[in-house]
Length: 239
Image 1: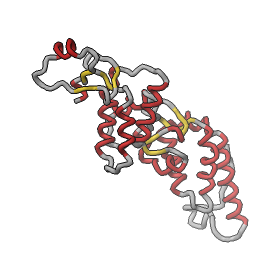
Image 2: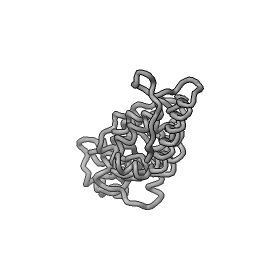
Image 3: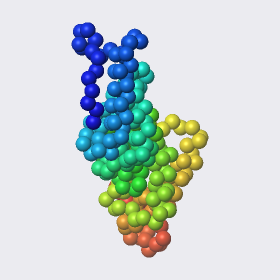
Image 4: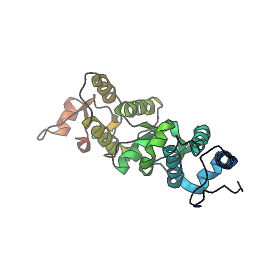
């Protein structure tokens, strides 16, 4: 807690922050003390304010980071924020800022939840307005590369794929693919994506896009099963 009086300007609408008199130096010292005190109680601040108000405050501090007098608040936040889980995710959990990613606005809530459920830290959309501050502290935009890496890590961990999330995972990756440029460098990324078994065949078994086959209209599924029992047919919901 800081309990001190500032020296006001003659109109009493602001405090003295110019000149070389003692009143300016006193005011600047009080602002620095206040910034240090706020940073010292940062963990408590997270609980008191909640995600929206916390990042509204952080965003305001970032906006005046170059100010000679008030820039001390952003400097103080930069020191303590990386030490705490202060980014709010779509899974309603606090997480370190550097471990979270802001997804494109074209993804739905259920798609964001599906990505978060497989370990890709998805930032809550409510924090989008504070993106500049979050990015300055290490948050990153969600890219197809990070989605593929997250899906691969989930597969390698041996964790189960939640059946009710598969459709959303597929639609989310489809949307990410749709907004990509078409350079040759993306071909290897797409090949990796095709190899991850985050989809399902028509019997509900995990399968990758590279192993699935599309059954055209008029073809008897039972007959295919007798002739080629090992063939995985794509679930119609992903077509």
